Image 1: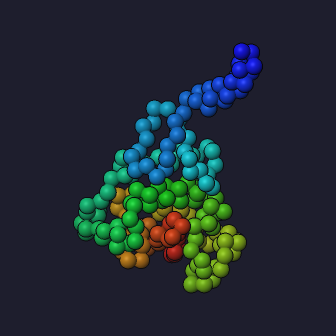
Image 2: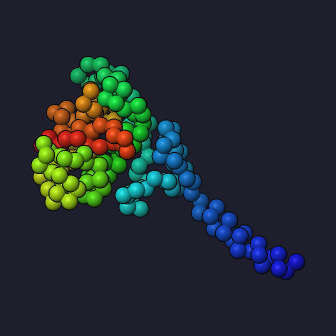
Length: 182
């Protein structure tokens, strides 16, 4: 009997430790926003600092889709831009905002489509060296101010800013930045 207790004790302690942190796990692929009544632990925290993980949740306003743009025009379907999951795109956009706000050059370099800027930037190392040339104060502000329910899209992808400041598209391995026009 004592032998069984010693064998089960580590297992019971492990279960207690895993289930007693007061948080719940949320899959970023889930399209419904989590309720913010307990701390959230995200499964997909690639390239994120622990202090900013909780800021990934999309608000109901950000999840809202557009039916008419602020200028009165009707948006093109997401599918025309090659985006089959607008919520996943908006979650990616939220990550971009966090990465840019924190100047996370490695994370941003990982989502650039190379060669970049008409072939001037061949790889991630070259992009990181030229980061400040692309992510200027104006571009950073445009990205932070982007209304998630007013995202222009066409056959080139999705556009951030009304002057074509940043262009994004869906690639085989996620979303990529194809252009930054500053």
